[in-house]
Length: 273
Image (cartoon, rainbow, N blue to C red):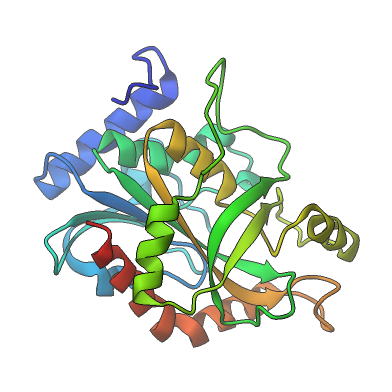
């Protein structure tokens, strides 16, 4: 349990229960870090390391099957070649599922309860900047939360000056110096953004738009975790793209980029000691 949690906090108790199940399944007291797999990133678990234990989301307290194509619905503990133990979460809950913010942030809270010191949050997203073509991985430097929700409850005043760790971004650039950075705007979904909403996000300073990550990142920081964010541009955003958007396009972009981004993610995880 972290310093920010209280024994009477239901979300903390649920995270502790999930961590207990994972400890028993993996035969480990703790993990070193966690990775949340977004659209396009699901094959990365096999490259990160050797599976120690894999549990279906519905067997873990507080986890849910998203039902979104491209998400595995499993939570896996792997051991990397460098000897790290990594919690790989392929069962992300999205705000648009209607299960509430605590469900959305449960994965990172469970990772903290399991002893992780850092989390890598990945996603598939729309590109506002035309220079960020589909298939481009982008480091998240900052975010704009446009969901109308907070990851926190009560008087928990978390500094958000550096939600996404400069240290971890520097490590990522040791693996891939060419990685661009961008600002990610999280919308509520599940509908894709309108061209007017994309123009608004661009005016606010966003380079990327999507339906995840920002709430999880704040929750992770509240639990004391360092955060690295990695987006895969799967499509140009509405109004930037000349064609209508579809989830099939998102999935195809993920499949096409998978060999490159999964190795990239595995190499970055190996750098985070």
